[in-house]
Length: 276
Image (cartoon, rainbow, N blue to C red; front, side, top):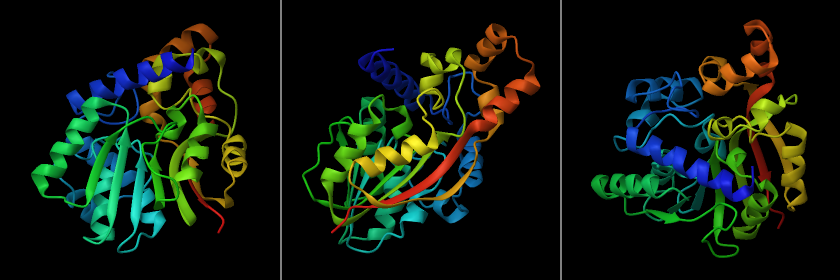
């Protein structure tokens, strides 16, 4: 797929999620959907009950693969940027951490998500959160202007991850921190999955090998690049994706073999620093 075709498919897919309020990375046939399951998914990937209950209703769509806010150790007065902010879940958590003297900027390319996030902020009285329309490869943010960048299961969706990390480096202040939760691979995926548009929206086929992901961050100029945690991504959601069904048919693999194949899909929590 060409880069613009990928962005179009991702934009359409997440626009549909915003309208339907279904949760989890994946197609409409995914096993994960509905508010209660969004909360269940969030608990599994590192959010506690206080965090889940401490954001506006409808902000948590269960789309993440980790809790970058907890890992980032945010402080009062800091300026935070969320790449691919969706309905605003992590932004509102960050806003609670940085307080009235701090600021949170969410960037998302999906108009439906942006509308949902802005409504959530307005209806819940968040004055220190701002949502901007834009692509994470072309951030609508000034140079050297943010203290911390967070992102949750979004950079894997970009067809140009190198540019994403270059942009992140540009907008961070010297000494600023990058903290992302994302999908990475420990092994190669079969072509039928890697080339599938549905699997791209489902956070799978856009993922790259973990070592390559870390290299992209280092090549952008970051130092202290480190994987803090990594674990196999919940396979029950992946197995319900229509793309996996196609893979089984085309590759002639048994369900056991497919399960083993997708053990290569990991959720990783990664940190890095922009040198002073």
